[in-house]
Length: 104
Image 1: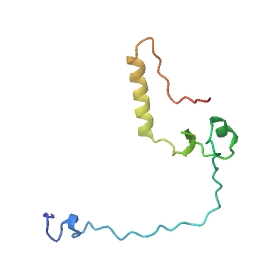
Image 2: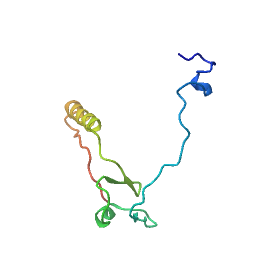
Image 3: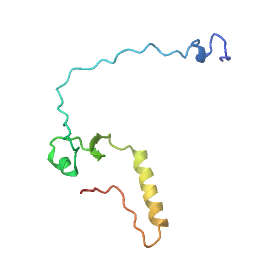
Image 4: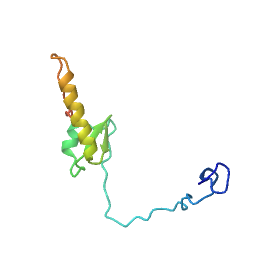
């Protein structure tokens, strides 16, 4: 067990919890990727349909393309529970909607 200030104290660099020195990650050569270059006025919703080969989870946020990873099970469960509780507790004159697409 480490005591603050002794030779095993991880906050002073001692002990067996030291991380190995950081090294540059090795990157395997791959085919080149041509990322879409935004127009001066930014991307629009129409661009999402027009640009070929975008990753499946591409989002348009503030005129920029955002490439996000697929959701994990925990994320989907939380969304479902929130959706259920919002629908259950929302006043009759309000509707709950999620994951809608917008265009101008």
